[in-house]
Length: 474
Ligand code: SF4
Image (cartoon, rainbow, N blue to C red):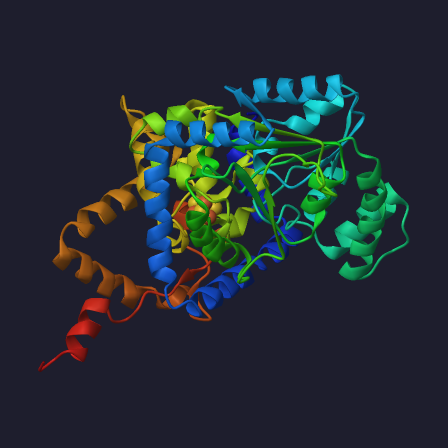
């Protein structure tokens, strides 16, 4: 997996200074509002999350058995199963299939795992045209960019950006609204769907007991990618297997709600083998590639194993205060945001990606919102301590004043009396720095903390004293 995380500091500095990006990223809050409203309507939302986590725990602990069951069932249905240890092996399998079937054009459904293994690049090197058919993916492909969000790949682009891009690449006039742009993309893609030889998708789930690949989407492009071309290849990380259709029902109730606030996505496709005699649609051949690419290494590490439970819903990105300022590209990896800060080091090694676990406030919002309750902050702390082993100090480059402040903070945090006294003094002294109830600029070398965001004013009364006042006499 190719990563560009060495440039994280420069790229994130550029991201926070990019006004267009900052205005686009404000949309993330609305995703969370919709997600919360969708869960509020579910009577058993919290119980479903517990159930989903329990299913993942059980499956990941018995991954070999479920994968074997899945393979047996797919073979029974006439499909083919390929095992790939690395991204290169997975790409080689696809290329081999493409050569055997004289494939010149491929249509692709949105798939993070094919981004992870850089399948498009591998196909292009062989002279095979690979066209992304999800609208957001189509846009970033036209722009020669990478997706910046698991769910909304082009979230960083404004309408005007997309209009300019279409004018440049597709020769359209100055399109004004999203509807017009969608019509243009749909017309272009229809023609491509009808002439593609191979459809490539990921898989949201694979049901072991039936050999069914389940694909969740809103645009219908995956339906076309899996039914029009002669060959359908699904590329799937080994962690996506689930035991049964009953388990699937649990995940379908929480996935779309977490991702987009929908009760259910517009299309849920169940691919159970290739087209059978008397069936009118479906691919003539079905292949499933089961990809490891570092997943068994994660599986072997009990402390980070739960990152394999991830459903790729994107909810933790939307709620993360760091992602909300940076967007996805600064992370330098196909997996961004809180879950990306765990997966990228796990896949690419901590040496290259050391900045990512430190790019978090550890506020815990990601853990709170995650439909399978992955304890992301705990894993981030584990990665931080792993990197710091042997006396390495991540904060070595910070100023004396900043380091002193952190030491004083740590000292006070361990002594409640000192902490509350310091707070009272600071709340009294902050007056001259306040502007509209916020601290817009901290002095001297602490100024970095307010360079790109404001601090809320320190409360005059601590939580403890408010609690005491509230409960006096009880
Ligand atoms: S870690 Fe949880 S919230 Fe984040 S993408 Fe994965 S499933 Fe969704």
